[in-house]
Image (cartoon, rainbow over all chains, first blue to last red; front, side, top):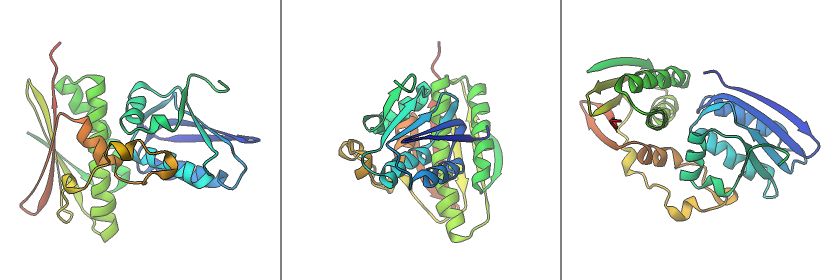
Length: 106
Length: 141
């Protein structure tokens, strides 16, 4: 399924809605979106993943890249990820570095 | 045994995952096993395309061979890149996985997810081809 990403910037919050499947091809689009906001004073990156059906390690690498590019004070929230994506985050230990929530603002 | 060929480009990953989904459905795999197999195959084929083909300017296909029995689904990916054994690579250990995002290495998670996602994974180099073999067991209700 085709990947789509929508970004809304609201002061220090960047909210991205990810739809479809995030693989090594679509991760390039995701990374470009992150690069576009990287020079903004962002404190919170909110990723709405309710309609994201698949995420490979290429997607995980963009999460790592986001934190390394934007800076250590960035908080990453993942909103409503599907169960199998939570499983990937847990297996790779990334769930310790992001906050998984049902809605944002929490 | 069924065989299907795909062009060795990242644009093929979408249809590859659809095909793996179709095989999994025919084999009667659960939703979770289907997802894990799709993820494992996607990770290995991504490495083949990016590092085995694109990086060295090789234009070639890769082939998916599959076999369904009552007990399991076997998928073998064969490619023409230089020999590369994914199992020879050092995988992230518990200490690496506990690191914060700031201190993480960017790579290494794909093969980790492959090995930890399928029931069996093996590799061999035979007849000038890399053969990555994935097995998922069918759990009877």
